[in-house]
Image (cartoon, rainbow, N blue to C red; front, top):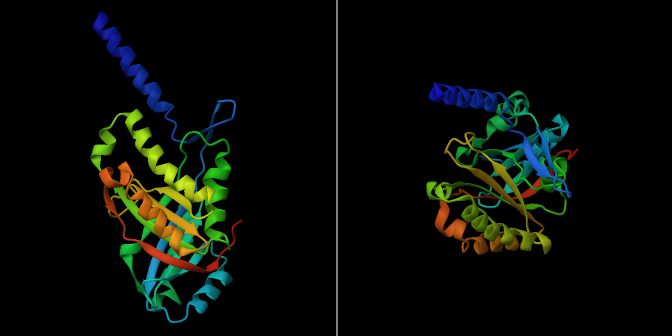
Length: 252
């Protein structure tokens, strides 16, 4: 009888937990109170080759009011990259999909190995979730002061997921410290997107590193190679898309 009561209580507890499952983004006020926000910004990168008039592409994007950035691909003399963003994933099917399927994109050659898609996420300590999840990443990619960008996906190894939480925090703190030092110096600013279940290649994250000059972006990637996360717990990294912004859509 006692065992049955315990089992019933456990089942009821599981049902209550399932009914109140909270997958919103979490932050924390300066006084320590937990805050939540069920909003996030999605971003998608498409790359194309065979573009001999990037200005015509930019004009088309401007006329259609696209939310995004058009990059010239450093490693392809006729290559471009289109980064789009919106809070609704429907935007990418209802607006971006017909856009890139029609003129003038239909004359270009898609480069699917560069396709990336992800969502902004919180770390749990942000005091202003709207700024962290929506405003800051949107304004960074559209900033006139940050024309250079390096975008790449990554997948952590299963060994990292098996570490205890304290060890994970230590590894992430070391890695994040490198990025913060470059950010404070004004040399490189990052965009972190989660892509669990959203990537064809089963990646975990999409990273964008933005800056006024290209060299610091290369330098921060080089510096991060030495961290425990990159050297010991990254299973796959790249491919890398390196571009310079030619056109930017509305940040607001």
